[in-house]
Length: 302
Image (cartoon, rainbow, N blue to C red; front, top):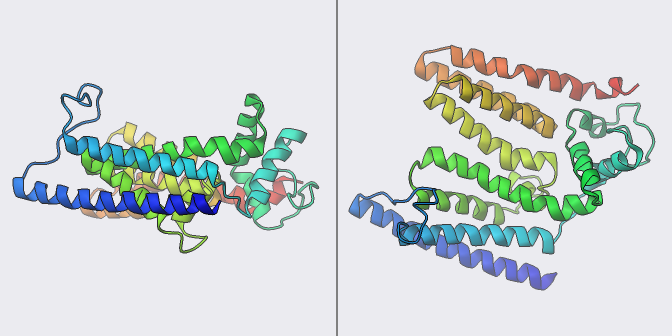
């Protein structure tokens, strides 16, 4: 375990140094030559004959850091105190066929309000994990700690890649560097057990960690798309992102309201079209329903 931590630290530090050097060189070339980094994400342009060396290096750095993070999540498996709730509720759902009805500390029916445990009623992520484990024939704890992180880290990478698409359109190398730097920030931000980067690195299988790693960048992506292209498809995507965030965690309920209302207000003032604020508040109606269930879940359990 100690050797694994040492190797992970050395590899992360080395990759970060190489990435920083590559970013500085790229900035220099960009401003001196006034020529943006070329390359687009397509099978045709990604062939060795059409891809420049910068794109290859940037993609290689991104691929290496993602592989290291996935390997770290499996080899250096972390178990968090919150697993006593989420994993226990998942196993209880599989064994007894009931959804979030047990007190994870005692195993008895949950009929009174005992704080955060009853609030899981509005965020059935643990039940979804139980369903996946049941149909796959895999033990819930093994699925959550070993298999699911592999796919979730790829999902986080894809979420930030979509955000990079709207920030650096048509610039493949810059998108790779952006996502790589996001991962480096997560790796070197373990200064608290409560910050969002630690959530992503150490407990990605929990609903609130997925809100931090996937929902927030997807909110930013959806809001930027609505700002640039005011179409019903973009509003529908934003509503689906908000709904998924509510189902993941109680934090997602609050974060969705804050982001939608604040961005809607800013867009309305900038564009002088108050329909942005109106539509944003309409999207928050789902958050209101989930919040009422979240705060009064124990009443529904009687």
